[in-house]
Length: 249
Image (cartoon, rainbow, N blue to C red; front, side, top):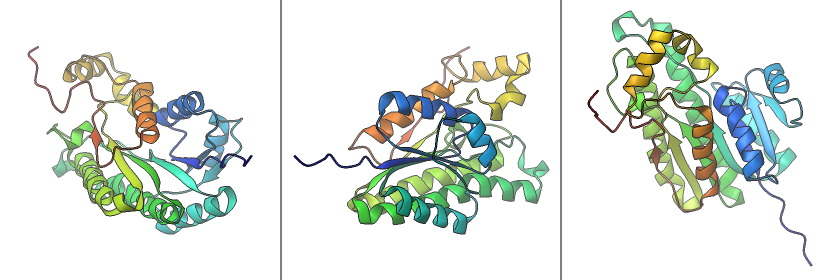
């Protein structure tokens, strides 16, 4: 009897953030045999967050060469990569006229350029091995006009455009590319905003379901997108209806 094929690796880039931690826990419970590979800019933070996770790598996702080297290393070390999740991002809440050029550049670099680098590296790696699944992160702010989200909305809208075009480009190669667009998620990245009771209450009221999004909810959606086999080119709003519903207060 032939041995079953070795499961393809799942790479999570930006794993030490709030959504990343929830996703690792969720995937461990959902697919215990999946080899998880975790990557992020700060290697020490990864090892501190996941002390029992042996496969951790340092990478700056905004650096195209570094991302290419990471995928080459992983392919040589772990074999085929079956799925990739891009969780690198930032939040900038400012109107355009007060946004400094360097803030704009950093927002585009961290959110859109890093996503493009990961798609490019992942697709190069997946095409020779029969395809795979890629999940990117956008935002409800890219789908509805919210004040003072000018730069981040533009960057995240770019991620949606990237998702749709790349999904079409690589569909015949067996690569599925989808995107999750959450509302405000209760993670350390949003801690400054949510630590103020008035700001938190206002943020909750913006979401028709009246709740800030939990990282576990985003992780469950990502897990489903990685597990299913016939979904591609989709933008999934885990946003409590923020980007699609108008309800009376």
